[in-house]
Image (cartoon, rainbow, N blue to C red; front, side):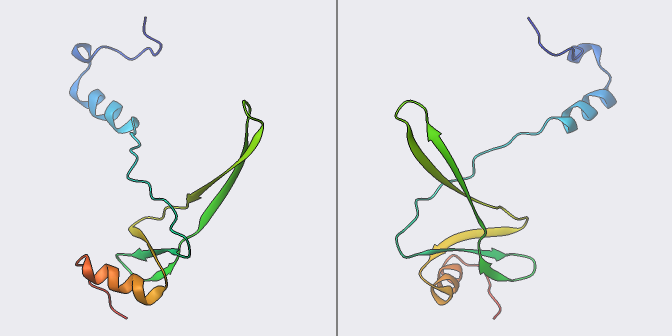
Length: 105
């Protein structure tokens, strides 16, 4: 049983297939990291070369089974940025250079 009324691919023309493929978006989990005690999450914009502390969004919820509060933290991901944890800004720059990313200060 089909939920959506999409026409079959053999019934479509090439232009219709391209439009349909553009409408579908896939989301992939890039990675997760555990928070290291005493470290700060920094972001580096690859185009502008800007280094700043990453914006973190706190989400609070309740586990219905155990009735205990849960706290989750998510990073607000920006375009063309990479994120790493470091003790301070100087160590963050060292890590970027070690990975082969050119940093202009």
